[in-house]
Image 1 (cartoon, helix red, strand yellow):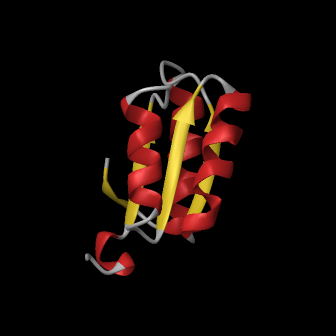
Image 2: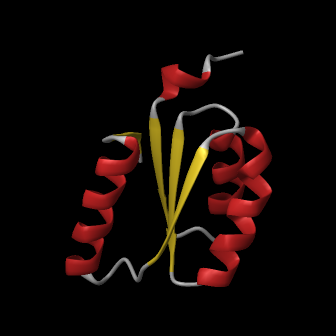
Length: 88
């Protein structure tokens, strides 16, 4: 198994009911921190709650990824809190 710290931080954009939420669960078990971005705040909270038992810090950002200014602030906050993403 891959040590948690070796995967560093992960950024997942467009978290939905398919690949994005599956990736969030996968990486929350294997990385130091995961940031998830999508427009649906309540769904992001559900995904975060599902990932909570894995031990990684999961940051939730309800942001429309077409909003460049908000995305820049989101990435800045992520980098400050869990570091530069190693996997996007």
